[in-house]
Length: 207
Length: 98
Image (cartoon, rainbow over all chains, first blue to last red; front, side, top):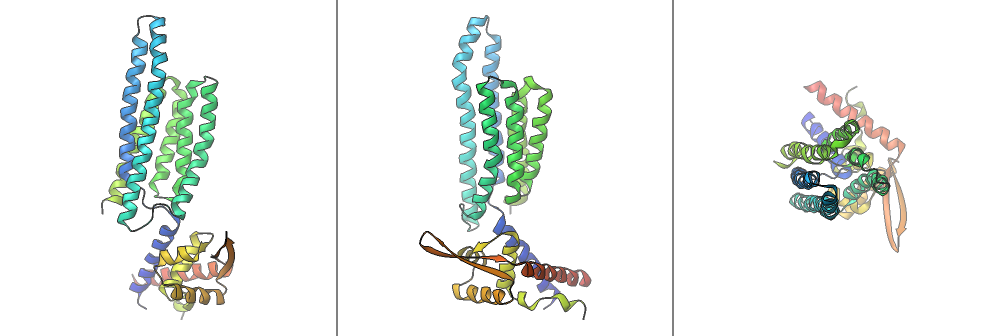
């Protein structure tokens, strides 16, 4: 065997190690779109909150905020739902293009490891909302989402790890700016997703 | 002598190299997963698995999932060590020739 064959051997080993342990069909485009949904959502939420603030008296502001709660919840779930659907659809398309399956050992492992910190965080946040301690919701959602990304990154494209670390950092910084939760959400879920999604798109998708 | 000594004949085939690569990063893999990843036929894969088992580089665990028999494979300590030495040897040869 010549050294060229040995190099081919090493590349084959690397390829198989990645393919068998990491879910490679995650699409950068879904990150960009999730970021855009999040920013759009944040824009509307911001407008609703401004309406509440601008109300002429406390009764009026109370009525508006009461009506707004459902809209706010709908926006939050709308963003989440759209992001998940987009991610699944684009991953499915990418997997099909590379003749791989969307639901296999690697995507299962990715999902389980992503959900462990996320569900833990979810319980914390439900607890906080129940006790009406709203100020800590933004830092904690960012921190737990970041931890979920870092945990999942071992089973998918490497960039996810850096996205996770950035989001955790934002969550921790926002502890010192408790009134600005929405701004940090827009940065973490919007801007970060767009930046890292674009990086992933350029590196992995455009080939 | 020297350079070639650690090149392991047992890994001198694409399928066997592939099986070991997969078992390095996964605790275990079953027959069908290996088949899919390596794009091999049943008979071909089975004979290479047998060869690796004979060298005691892999473990074979037979179990049942429901009523379906399922065979899964994992790398032994001997296998892991031999494979690492093989990769190191490959790297040394490539670096020497640069």
